[in-house]
Length: 290
Ligand code: 13P
View 1 (cartoon, rainbow, N blue to C red):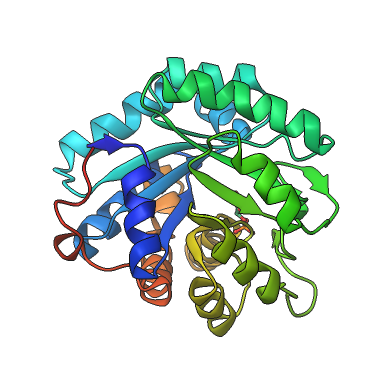
View 2: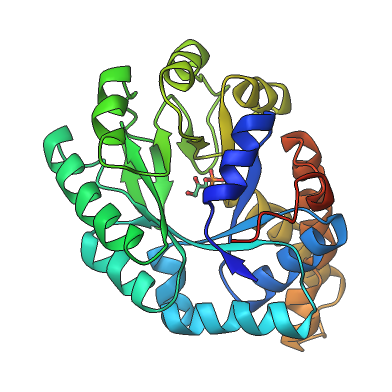
């Protein structure tokens, strides 16, 4: 069942754990993630970037594909299908109109008043349709969908201003970057804790790849309830597939080539869920189905 993230993340905030957000790129990504999370009986958020939506065909294709997998694979855990880094009101509206129950509006590239104005427009449209909204303030550095961003850390004042829009979760940029880190990540835990203490909504950590596990757990203890992972699954899949092609140069069936990365991805998902301390669904009521 596709749900929005509201209850999922509020539960996570009350009980100090994080729900994984894994970006999906294609049918296989969605299938491997759903199968693993069903095996583990944990809730999951499937993130779809604008680039991934374009690659797969469109929001409707993605929604119907995920719904089809849920039915065909008898998936019973709560699954949130979420637009990741929607760049405008129009893109968020397109996702919502195609049946997404969760969107992120990322207007963090604008000055704060403009970020607030666009985010509010998305919140009004989304909430009228039962859709949850995440927004970002400050800049997460690094590269996503080939778009490079500089790092600028959110302040408590920035966060308070954005929360006035009625958003359901907030991604304050606090030193994490998208993609691979060069050197040790430098997360501002003191600011994270300060923002968590001052607000009542769940916080989101973008750029989860490459953050040492002890730092991830510290971030959870400072109030992070959703952790976004994209590159890490791509890297383990790529390494396994590269090895397979090297060892089997004459196998060209795409199902075998693409599928040779399946176990590596599933192992990494199991490992991350353990680090995030996400409890099994039966420990969190009726899997928070809305
Ligand atoms: P990584 O690619 O660094 O894991 O970041 C993913 C992300 O934050 C998606 O929004």
